[in-house]
Length: 282
Image: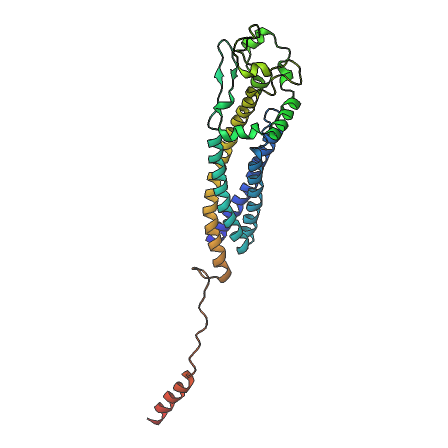
């Protein structure tokens, strides 16, 4: 009864984690395809872990329900590696996205973002020419800036913007184009009102992309933590199921019976014959 209950529980739990891996995979795909989040360097680990959870949960489900010890051994070994990887990924995500945040602009609802406030690892990801070209193409293709192209000066005073709109679709608010001789933010000189240029080469645009990535990653980290706690609990139950499956193979309550049939020494029969003869004589 206990054996069947334990294996049934681990089977159902692995079925649950198999289904739970789908939101993780979906979150990675959403992060990759979202029109507001063009950071392709954060969703790849999430997709990999989602597919690994899917495969490992399938192995655990088969091992528990059909009592296949090698499948459960595979499941427990890689589940331990997965828990370590997911824990490391979650901590790494919080560390590299720990900085950032917007600066309040006087008289405005929106905030502005500075590249130097983000971690060096994130800045390096967007600073590389090939990476930024791909991200820039994604931002331009999303037509995020088209949504504020016809704003009036009153709209800029009263309405909010996303980090990408604030960084990529307008020059910094501090720019004063009536006084070109004054020292200004370098992004003021990178700005161009052509729809295909705007401020896409500005540091503020890169900062806006990183802020969007930071917000998305923090949302997904909540899912990662919940999944991590669930996997730790399931791993503990899986250890019990593996032990019970081994017991079921031999039908012994404490594992496999390794005792073999006792084999007498070579002189056992001779001494037995001599012992019997002595009793007959005396």
